[in-house]
Image (cartoon, rainbow, N blue to C red; front, top):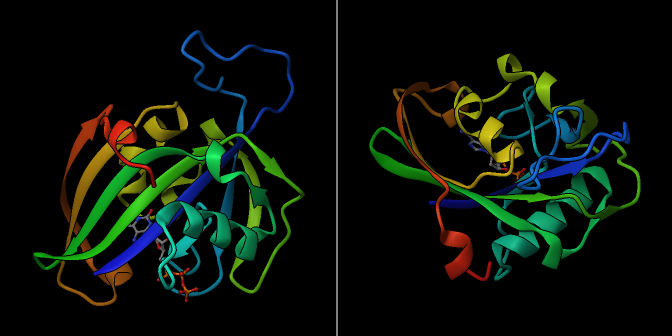
Length: 181
Ligand SMILES: Nc1[nH]c(=O)nc2c1ncn2[C@H]1C[C@H](O)[C@@H](COP(=O)(O)OP(=O)(O)OP(=O)(O)O)O1
């Protein structure tokens, strides 16, 4: 089983409109997406992220992958755990993915061998050029919600060539309170 991360960095476009009362970003906020240049999901948009290395925690992995892929420095303490996603292929767990969200970063995104970064308004996220499951969970994550999800793929290898079969989602999951990663 692969353990991996995704990290969604948000910024306010500075149009002066306040976020909503719950602190969720307003519709003009932007998210940093990458066009993935290699590996699983090549050619699709996603957040920066990747597989855990050595004995690092998911949070450390999200910070490292964001640095390596787009050159932004993140504050690990300011990463909010936003999701835990399990991707199954032909009935077996293929990848467990920890999803983070943050509005705190330093630097300017720059492209790398792995990724071409792009700030995208959160109401213009190109779901037709992303993993098929993303449209099910990413809008809520960008609104500030937390999600636990299982997504079943079948009939192919690698995962990004398999067929997306079905899913289960639990919104407003409370893992943030019990996990330190
Ligand atoms: N169904 C899915 N939906 C999604 O949004 N992201 C998925 C996904 N399945 C896998 N991912 C993401 C999670 C993780 O960020 C990434 C893993 O891709 P890779 O195996 O290419 O990892 P890396 O980017 O670490 O590659 P290396 O640098 O070669 O290790 O793909």
